[in-house]
Length: 152
Image (tube, rainbow, N blue to C red; front, side, top):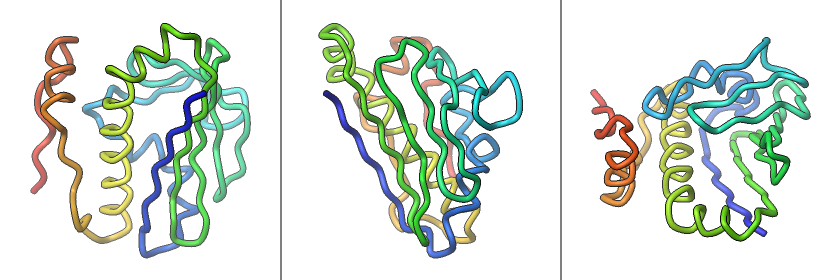
């Protein structure tokens, strides 16, 4: 079982950011696209990561199930805190991929997204996310954009 949680205090009500996930998605991680407006039943994802929306409560939470059925990820809001939780019961091969590669990319992507949320909330993150050398190397090996976007 894999469980991965990210939270961020935004300093403003976090609910509206649940619906703004596509708008504020960091472009370096592939455009987040769906076959219909965001809501239950929407199929899509970003880059090679495919999922579909299984639950959506505007202003509160949105849950996506991975297309292969091995897990879910949920973006939720409570007061001024936004939270992302990935839970998966992956087979051994995917657990190894997670440990060596995917976790590091996932964590970097989520922190970039949360930085964008904070900026949209009207403040610069106190400690903006920085990609580790491992994330930069993995992105280079897989032919992804090799550099983290520079912030003004």
